Image (cartoon, rainbow, N blue to C red; front, side, top):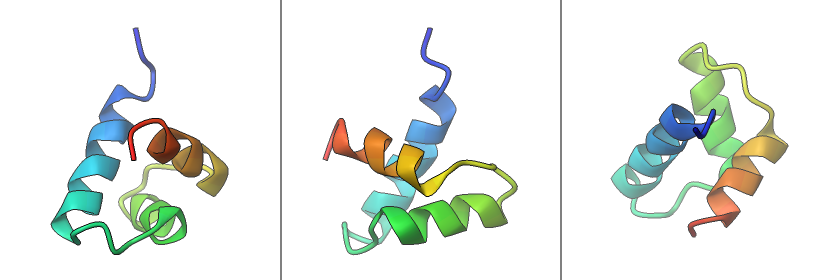
Length: 51
C-alpha cells in the first residue's frame, strides 16, 4: 500500500493541467494551500519517480 497514492494523483493532475511548467516548489505550495501538509522535498522525490 502506497501512503502517498492520493498525493501523487494530485501532483500529476496539477502538473498536467499546467503542461509541465510548474516545478516541485510551486506544486508544494499549491498542495499546502489545499491543506495537504507535505514537504517540498517529498514532492520533489515523488515527482522524480515518474517525470
